[in-house]
Length: 471
Ligand code: AMP
Ligand code: ZN
Image (cartoon, rainbow, N blue to C red; front, side, top):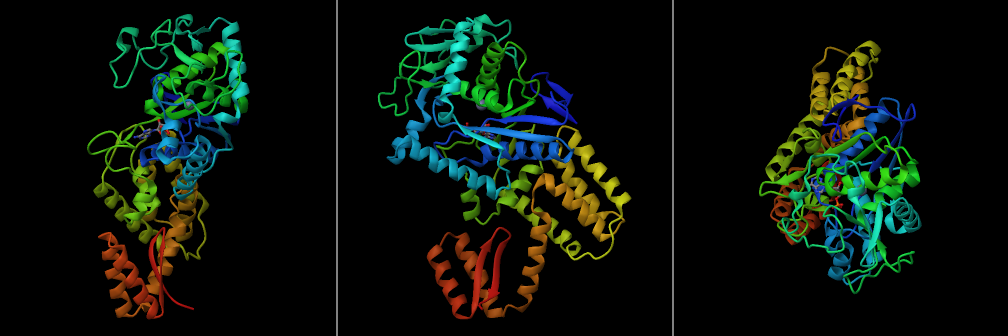
């Protein structure tokens, strides 16, 4: 497989340190709020990558951190503490916020068919490991104490900027909004490994350390967690494009300084999902969550389909209209697959292998999911048995996870049921859909009662509204 590598700036042949085994690390969410659908685009593309590596026969162990301490609003160690901000907003403790939004994150992942990683590790659960790594970095001369905090000394490295040719002059303090100078730093690019002098008076989470009561910086958690579960050699490290600098740059600096050798040769970054007005945000404009998509009548699978239709290395613009188009295309695709569900003929193994070869060709070319979807349409048009087509779609969907056969079968059931719905009930169903669209939920509920009184029940499913007789 050829996969674009942010370290080498080219598509490289994917290799593993140990034959047949992939140790894959994914930077996880900061659990101070719901994930927005941009964050989830990144997790979805990482999910497809993981599933495709499995499809090719590799044994994948995936690791994900949960950031529940140390992440400030600026990735460069300044600004407010994100977790404290969340706790204040909701008048709860940091740990309550962390538990609530961790669950919410995995609930969203489940709706979007994003598989859970094998190892999920909250940062607060591995503080001892981080302290050990920081102690070693101090012993080796890669870190220093200043003003009570411990910093990584980037001047000790031959090459600190590993992804880009950043020059230190380009990092003028004050250039980015909210960035404050930190006079303890010896070099502008140095970063915090351990905070003891917290500027947050009400910092809730603190641990004893050789440098006093404090808490870890954000970057050290990924190094500590990755090394704990994957050992000294990681095969693949993933995240959104904004993680490249400073987060992943700092992860490499401290990991390689600690280990004394190369750490991870392959870096996978997903470009952002933007809105028509620009950057996606949790605080400004419409806060786009999976629940909001559902409230507006979109299925999570339509969103997954929308993301799969474009390449992960291109930024993607979200608009309701674009999603509407994707949902329409998804429904049409299901309708095309529907007749295959009941196929009774035989699978032509040679034809199946030839069709699936087109799928692997697409995916081997830097995870081209858009091309993989085109292959599905080609399969539907192919001159072969229905069972062969169904088998191919099943295999492809073990990677794309679009619930194609399941939802096509549900559509078939729904269509059969729809045929028998009396016109009076059908009219009410349509009125209710219009009321929901207009967000007149009181009217929608009243119409539902009318439908129930006529002996029919109405259910919202991932595939849309299903109407069935009561009893
Ligand atoms: P956070 O919870 O802020 O640490 O972000 C979780 C993940 O989402 C990280 O891998 C980010 O790089 C990624 N991310 C943040 N914003 C976007 C976006 N608009 N589109 C895609 N991925 C994003
Ligand atoms: Zn990370």
